[in-house]
Image (cartoon, rainbow, N blue to C red; front, side, top):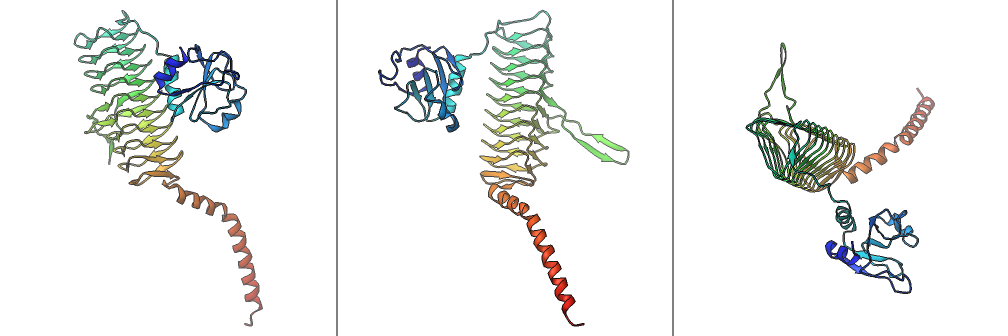
Length: 350
């Protein structure tokens, strides 16, 4: 790809080095690879998104770099963008486009007579599509995918190997679901009684919005009566769990092992760090960030960063950590004071 074409596609400012610094570098130069800055070779594009790697700029062999601010002393072409990480992601999509599929249904796939499968869809061997299911245009179902009765898979969605879509589930357009994930398993609903636990039928559904990505081994449970929903543009990392009846907003990030108890409400542009958990029915406002290993036990109604168990504003959590570190020192001081008081009491007349 020509450097000038890439600059246009990324909407980046192209800054070329002085001819005496880098002979042969021009806007018509062909870029053939995308590489890390420390190991890039001639003809490749690299990127700088963290200042820690700026030390490699003078010595990198790359021919061009994506960065946030032009540097006049560099010997390579520069693609200057206000959000270099986003520009890198877009460049990566250009250098590594999705594999092209051959539409059609494998003879080893099962498609119920009442199911609807678009002619442009691709169904690999051992896919199972149940009665009344609808498979949209250009959908790709990899081996072992199960689509339950009356489930719907939106256009341009891709379900990797062994994904399970249970009955009546609605998957939006351009959704990517990685291997082993289960969408629409029964919610964890049991009523205790004298003779044990009575199972509560889970008759709600799961609705996944457009442009969602769901990692490997994710479970999203169907609601007992109401639907579990995942909003447009949200990204779920591997091993995430979304409990029954929960509602996850748009463009939210849930990192690995984050888990939502039933009926949790998550706003838009929320970030939940790894191993974060919630209790039942808590609500988290838009643009809240919850740090890793935190537990949300009550509503977080204001945007900001929260940490700890129970999760609280990060400044408060840091103060608590400082106090904890001083406990040993305080304990020693208290022991010393206790001994001194005991000595004074012993000296007092009886």
